[in-house]
Image: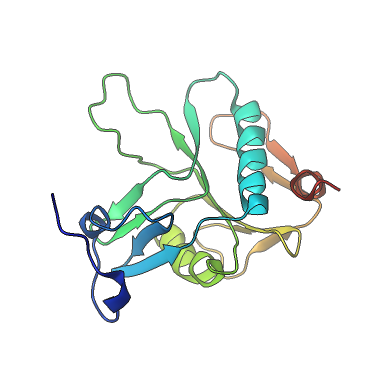
Length: 190
């Protein structure tokens, strides 16, 4: 059994995805981007409602087509030895039949729901990673502002959706349409 790592002395240490396996199972989410350790406490009830509602909406859209998986955290997405993240919600192609690896590859969509402790990482560190890795869609769900920031690889500013967000995944003949106000009404139960 590997010795647990001490996260209190993270300072200038360069972390790897392999280091995460030795961190304590203490209710925190541990991710690493470009060697920087990101530690997020357990999410709030409202955060989890947003993840659940958005995941359910995406599952309803993709239905039984079988070509894409809609997953919610925790699900590891490794981009490099020093970059492993767990988006709150993600859409990825289903692996080929007989695939040996369970690794998540080829993200089509990554979604992060902001929390006070994750805002800097979600808006800056992870956004830059997703853009650099050419993830076609990255959505940041801002519960307090009741809006969704939509980022694409070449964007310098996000598209801000307060009423409706449309996304046309590759190979589909109709877009996924999200009523943003309705999503937040379901999350906040108002």
